[in-house]
Every structure is written in structure tokens, then in C-alpha cells.
Length: 420
Image 1: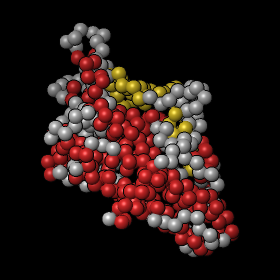
Image 2: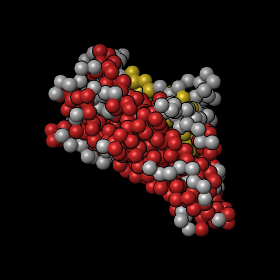
Image 3: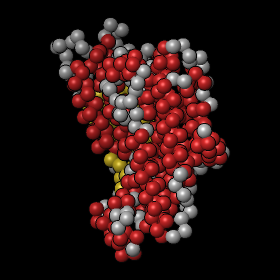
Image 4: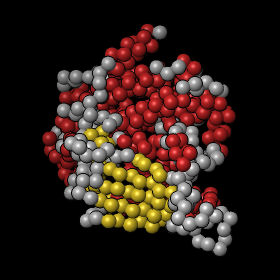
């Protein structure tokens, strides 16, 4: 009981601190200084900002109706965050000797790695728990629950990026930890190794200063088509076109891939299902148009998959909404009440999970640009368009447009705080 009381007081204390925004370019610049001192600063940042973020998430979950935390899967996720908080703050901060500093860094880094692994099943666990609450009639405030899920998953995206960026940007320091890495000569060698492998300093942890949008779209298209083939033994071609001087941006490639992959999965499935009774006509292709201007970049994905009825437009970003049947593994988890399925959204089923578009929109919202630049909205205009008689269903067009201002100076809406 004493430990639980201390954890509660710690969560209350850290939860009172605000989370401060941080630009993507500043995160990249910080990671460029890949030496021991910067690594120790990053560990201090992970300790303080990580504890604040975890406390905010726990407090958010505890503000839910009590019946929510009685559901086993949601309670399990809550307990994971409490465990991660307790593990992180158990590390004594403010080391006073080089040996204490090395021990502090090692324990914080180990905690960061453990958190990433521990929370892998979070999305599926929350999805199963909420579905069970819905089936049992416990979700009374649908809009409030939707808002909670948006905030919760946005916070999750932010803290996972924070932890991944630390582990990736300082991997040379981490790998040489405990050896002679703390000496000046070894520190220089470690930085030199990083420079030799990355001479243009293109990559800074999870950030790519020359993210090739077309290449990411091509990779996402390949994987989306492969999933479609596995389910239907057919898939439409995906045609990618680019307009502009170049197609490179400073961004987090894994986030951009997630967005495009989800949209392409939907398009490939819609086209294949619409033409499943047609053997004489080839599947019409899905088209991806990438346009980069001086201040923004637009990705437009268009398909002839029949679209979404206009009456359902307000539901497409709602959790659980899907035009496909639920995946068998998800239904089994809901029935059995256990969702310890270690999968991320990039490995989710082709369709039916119901979280693809909502979470993609959160990835798109995560980075916003200051000084009048637009944010990164995800708009889906999926209602049918009929340029020909209604009987000609092949003329229906559904399109998804993703617009962003991506100069690399964007502020993370799920902020990273100050790194010093």
C-alpha cells in the first residue's frame, strides 16, 4: 500500500508539469551533437519529460468512468503505464560523479527500451477493451470516449517517438556504454563512426532530412497490394506520379509510411471488392499524386472503389467504424477478453480493425508548422461521384488527400519538451 501511495503522489506531482512543444528541426539539431555530454542530456530529458508524459497518460486514464478501468484490457494498459512511470522515476537523477552519470544513463536507456517493448500491445488492448465495453452497453458518452482515444493515442505516438529517437540517435553511445566510451578519444571515434556511416548527416535518429516521399509511397503500395493479394488473390496496380522540383522533405519516415499505407490498404480493398464479380475487366489502378510546392507538400490518393456514402462521412474517423468485417483475431480477442497481441498498426490486418484512419489522422496532426503554415490535415472525400449514369458503378471515384507544410521546422503537437 505504501508503494502504491508513493506512486500516486509521484504521478500527481509530475502530472502538474506542462509538456512544452519542440520543433522537429531542433530535435534533429540536438541529435547531431552525438557525444557523451549530449547523450547524458538526452537521458536527463528522457527521465524528466518521460515521467511527465507518463503521469499525464495515467491521470487521463484515471479520469475515465470507473467502469472503463474495471475492464481487464484497459486496466492492464493503465497498469503498464504506472509500471513504466515507477521504473523510470526509481532511477536517481542528478548524478554527481562520472560513474554515477554512466549508471544513470544506462538505467534510463534500459527503461526506455523496456517501455517500448512493454507497450507494444497497447493499441489492440485498448481496442478490445473498448469493444467489450461497447457490447456490454457501458459506453454512454460516445463523443467523450472518442476525444479520450484521440488524446490517448496522440500521447502514445509522442512518447514512443521520444523513446525511439533517444535509442536511435545515440545508438553508438549506448552500444559502447560500460566500456571506454566515456574517454574523449573513444567519444570522438564513436562520432566518427557515425559520420562515416552517415556522411551527409541525413539521418538523425528516426528523422530523415531527405525523406523520399515517392519511395515511401512505393513501399507502402507494395505492402498494401501484398495484403490484398493474400485476401482476394487480386490487387489493383498503384500508379505513383510526382510533380515539383524534388520530392524530399525533412520528416519521420515511419509516420509518413503509416499514413500512406493505411490509405492505400483502404483503396486496394475497395477496388478489389467492387470488381469481385467481374472477370472481363482489369482492376482500375489506384493513383498517388505527390506535389511539392515551395511551402507545402500534398499527397493525393484516388481510387475507383465506389467511395463512401455521403451520409457516412462523419463516421470515417470514428474508432470502430469500418466497412469491412472484423478480423478473426480481433473477434476472438473480444470474445476471450484477452488482447495480448504484439502488433503495431503497420502490421494490422487489411481492413476491419477500425483504428486505421483515426490513428493515421493523429500521425498527420502530430506535426504542425509555425508562422502561418498550415497543419497537416488528413481529409477523406470518399463519397461517390457519378459523371456517368448511376448504373455505371465503375465511374465512382473515392479520393483521399493529405496536405502538409513540411519544411522540417514543424512543432510536434504531441510535444517533446525542452532538451536543453
